[in-house]
Amino acid sequence: MKYLLISLFVSLWFNAAIGQQDVLIKNGTLLTITDGVKEETDILLSNGKIKSIGKDLAAANARVIDAEGLFVMPGIVDAHSHIAIDAVNEATNPVTAEVFVGDAIDPYDIAMYRALAGGVTISHAMHGSANAIGGQCETLKHRWGELNPKSFVMEGAPRTIKFALGENPMRVHGEGKDIAPRTRMGIEQEFRRSFEGAKRYKQAWADHQSGKTKKPPAYSLRMQTLADILDGKIIIHCHSYRADEILMLMNVLSDFGVDKICFQHVNEGFKIAPELAEFGAHASVFSDWWAYKFEVYYSTAYNAAILTKNGVITSINSDDAGLIRHLYHEAAKTQRYGSLSDNEALRLITLNPAIQLGIDDRVGSLEVNKEADVAIFKNHPLSVYATPQMTIVDGVVRFDINEDMDDMRMEINPEAMLPAFYEQSEGHEDKCMQGVNSEHHHHAHSHHQH
Image (cartoon, rainbow, N blue to C red; front, side):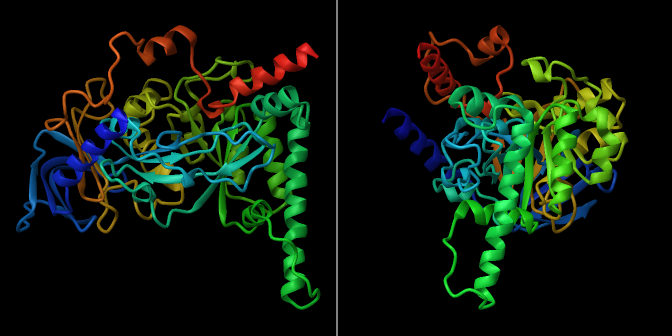
């Protein structure tokens, strides 16, 4: 009850403090992504869109932000996140395409505000990796302060779904429940069986609609979702590490005529970068996380650069409520490892993830008529000294370092250990497996007893 009351107070305070007003950012250094760097340039935000970019702009009744000496860039986009959702995994079946994380958005998740404090305006709230074919995901706008969970949904964003390769679905189902898939070749067959079933389902409905059969087939949300994947209506985002499995899934997709896929993590992507580029697959990677479990023992901090240089649309993601706060630092690492240019590095956290989510016509660069998602930095965002000053979503200031309340943790336990301490002590946790470890341990223990 205490948490709810504090959350309501904060939301009401934000709703009273913010509103839709023209915003004129003056004299900043604009990192446009698509049109170079524009020094001492203004940008006018109106009705949630970028209205104009140029020098000596003026607007009546606009809020004026002096960005002299500051850097203005598109809002950061995180293509792989689990913040602001109620649960990550529906681990009850190897295929759960019918579930949808967007049905349970948490508007009070403080991680969203902290993401804003790191310049992140959009995140891709993903189902976890417990299933070969998991649930559908949701693209979120960080409209912190709104009360209605639906207010955070990015209206019109393409549908996406989570697939997974490797240890996670094997461990949860094969080892944990003694059902398929137990092996990597079993995971491939889950994909093939599911797609074959979807083809039959589509044909059954086509036969009914053409009058060939009188009785309609039984409706299945799971099968309809799989059919929509075959029809190109849903973008696959697949948890992956090993090069051999990534090649396997591309072969499966080729057999079924599916070409919309972004491989997530893809730590061994550097081994097969030309093949990924030829297929048209995208890659969303960590900058330098690996070796936190056996199948991801082998990787390299040059991964993002190698993929980029081979023509693969590549992004850097967080998969973590802490890392999402400094994705700009993660992008900067690609200059230390791989010598990407400033613009190539910044594309990894702006336009490229927007392309992977199918929203690049709306966000990801500073262009007239795109949505007014903007992050303002003191010092260049790729500098180790970078500090986000202000984050704007749809033309509304959602984070301002000068107006930031002293403590946004809402509830403070002075005796609690900091999350960072646990991360350093125990290593990186696979956030895609939230909610299934205890279940797996229970099944494994019960199996051992019997």
